[in-house]
Length: 83
Image 1 (cartoon, rainbow, N blue to C red):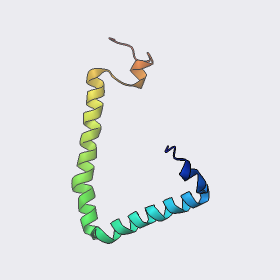
Image 2 (cartoon, helix red, strand yellow):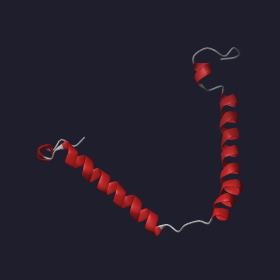
Image 3 (cartoon, rainbow, N blue to C red):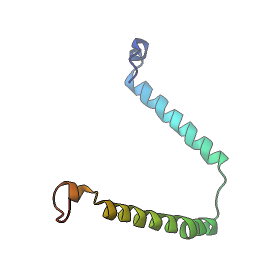
């Protein structure tokens, strides 16, 4: 947090409204500048890019955890085997 005495003069409700307006401006700006995708483009993006990418990460991370025997169950002593 910022410890600037002048900031304590502004009430909390005013800070909340300023933050809401700031984020509303940012979201509106991004929505206006980023091009829209058609439904078929979103489906292609999901099936051909996001699904294989997420499956790759699932297998890579699970393989890494199995190979290094690292994880919450192993650290808690719930997994038998080599340590």
